[in-house]
Image 1 (tube, helix red, strand yellow):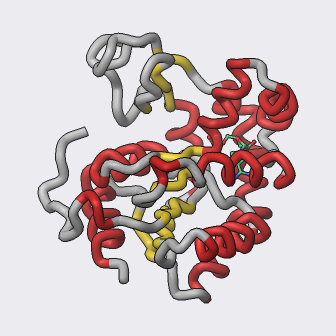
Image 2: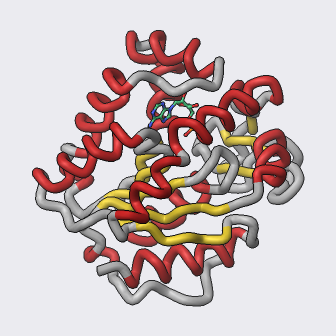
Length: 232
Ligand code: AMP
């Protein structure tokens, strides 16, 4: 992705908080979260990526999560929360981190709020990716991920120079099993039912910032920088 024209007023070591990216599957959270994490030099924590790694490695957690993910449903909190706590209490998270795909329920958000307070972080910044549902189908069916570095492309909106190969490392691109059309419906339904209530939840707490996620990747990133850089 091309560098954003504007830079954040914060320097890399000043995040010291969690940034939460909230929005439906296909809104562009993964692409923006990776870029923001790179910008601040902090970890990008995608719970979906963490689960996919467990699936590839065949761990007990991965075996439990796989069929649930393949149905497009949410993994139970008993599994998710332990995994998140283990990850964010590691030393590389001390300067802050960017969540992508977490929290996804009000119960997860309440649990996270307590944990962040206990750990002494500043209030989180929540970036809401607002987008028309019609655009999501195209983004999800066109999405391809590099098997090596996880870079995200889209056959319609962000094609690679060589078809099927990552621009960064030449890795083979693959489609996520849950980006197949038959799983997209249940995933969007799970979002509407379980995750969309978080928009009102975080708005009430005064933590939510809306971003028009239908815009081009670089424009969205400029707005994300503005929001995160300006947060008190
Ligand atoms: P994602 O990559 O964020 O679209 O997540 C892929 C799948 O992983 C989801 O459809 C869920 O099955 C599971 N997942 C990821 N994050 C969570 C979460 N915070 N809570 C429950 N399930 C999750």
